[in-house]
Structure formats: structure tokens, C-alpha cells
Image (cartoon, rainbow, N blue to C red):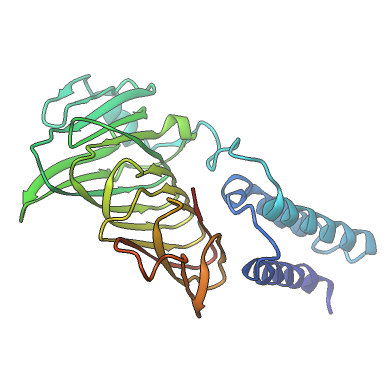
Length: 328
């Protein structure tokens, strides 16, 4: 085998073998490292480019060593959540955006209740939708390169506080067929923005009274949602390269959760006594379903599922992701 084929071959063998071992429960990946330590791929690629024409033994040994150490850190290094997915405080804007931003005035948006800050500094923007005794509510969230958090309640129907230096979001609400729909979506700004999580953070509060259906479409984002205080009928999550931490409360008569991701880390927690079924079509992804029994191919259930009155159904699909469902 030529030297220039060794490194790609080892990459395929190591990744494929590690995923197979993880699927059989022999390994447990630190999947969030993909989002925190992705520059390792740049290091591996750079070493191979520098030594591309060097066929000596020491050069081959160095390339293989960098590859093994890099993938080892990526898959198995336990670094917690101390690093951001995006490079800190890096941003690019085109001149047109800067000119428009400099001409903006600091005005309150009375329709949305948000407090705009166009100074270019990190500021707070507040979005509120009053609660009008809606029994059913739907929330649509769309955004990338953002850290979304949900953990507490509000007497409003919906409230969001953004920590950023730009007016990034569109917000609207409407009523149709007895369902109140709230849309919270990122605007299509000129240029692109790579900020730290704390510079582009959204804190969301929901009213606990309605039965909620939630649609979340996140590209490259960090999502930490605690639904344990809310009644959730449907949760639909789509993501590209994202990190999802989701805590569910007790299921309703039927609670449906749809997860569809590309290269993501997905961690779902359900109550210890909740009856839950998982259907997984996850390709090369790694699955860890603690406390579940495999009933047939790609199908898992909690021991109390068949006899339970209220049930939770989780449908998972993804390319190269890590799915972890556990009970608390």
C-alpha cells in the first residue's frame, strides 16, 4: 500500500470499528467532543499536507501518531462542557451591514416587546407573547450558531431573552383552529457571525398551562431544553452539527418525539417511571439506551411500556450522531 493511502485507510478502520463497538455497548463515545474539538481535523489534515511528499519512516510514524492521538481525544476525551463550538469573538460582516447598523437608532419595538440595542455591544432583547387561556399552543424555533436554553415557566404564553449584539430574530404569534402558534426565527443577516455561546444566547420561558407542540430546527447550535415542568404532546427536532440536551416530563396519553440530525450529539432524559418506546434508524450513529429492552430490530421499550396508559414514542434518525436516552 502506498504511504498516501495509509492515513485515510486508518481513519476509516478506526471510525468504523469504534462505531461498531459502541453499537454493541463495548465503548461509550464522548460525542460532544465533535463540537468542542473539531479543530483536531485541521491539525490532522495539516500534518498530512506538510508531510505529503515525505516517504520516510519517521514521517509516516508521525502522521499515524497524530491521527491516533487526535481521534482518541475526539472520541474518548472527557473535557466536560468547557469549550465553545465556535471560535470566540470572531465575526465577519460586509460593509453594507456595518453602514446600516451605524445608522440604526435605539428604539423600543412595541409589537414584540423587545428592547433593541443597535450599538454593536452585547445587549438584551426581550420578546413576550401574552397568555390568553390558550389550551393548545405550538412553538416554532429556527436558528443556528446559537445557544438555546429552556428551564423555567412564565405567566406569559412565551417569553424569550436574547443576549446578542444584533437584532437577529423575527417574532410573531397567531391563533387558528383553537391553537395559538408562536414563531421565533433567526433573520437572514448579511455576512456570517461566529460568536461565543455567551454572546449569542437565547433564554426561553413557557407557560405551563397549555399542551405544547414544539418544532425546533437548529443548524449548528447548542440546545438545552428542560420540558419537565410542561405538558408536551409533540416535539420535532432537526439539526445539522448540533448538541442537544433534552429533559422530558411525564408523557401525556401520547407524547411523540421526532429526532432527525446529521452529525450531532443528542442526550434525552425521561422520568424513571415513564413508559417509552424508541424506534431508531440511525445509520452509522452510536446508540446508548440505558434501561430499555430491545424488542426487535431498531426497536426498544421500557419494561412497563405495554401495560402503561400514558406512553412516549421516540423516533430517531441520523447520519453520524450519538444518541443517548436515559431515565432520571
